[in-house]
Structure formats: structure tokens, C-alpha cells
Image (cartoon, rainbow, N blue to C red):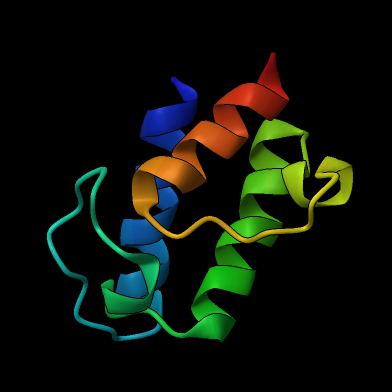
Length: 81
């Protein structure tokens, strides 16, 4: 499974598990408008670390959190290389 597919699957799984209504997923989706709260995003990050074996946030030099889903996916794609 690609990094992109893994990230999207985690968003969908966490939204379902947390009983949240997920906005349509696209690269330009602003994470704050996704329908998920900070706990959901923290769960996604933890599950992606387990699934992909990378934590791009610990390696990030600027410490900035991605704004859009596309930014989020790109962060994981870069870390997986």
C-alpha cells in the first residue's frame, strides 16, 4: 500500500471509530476543516508511525504542522524516502 493510501485509510478509519463526519478527502482539504479534532489527528499520527515506521514530526526542523491533507501526505512521503 502506498503512503498516500495508508494516510487516507487512517483518516477514514479514525473518523469512523471516533464517529466523526469526514469531509471529502482531497489534497486541498484544510485539516482544520476535515471534521476531525486534535485527538483524531494525534491518533492518526500514532497509527501511521506504527504502520509506516516513520515519525516525520520528530525529524521536522521547523516544527510546523501541515495545513492541508496534501501537505500532511507529502510530509509522510518525504519521511518514508
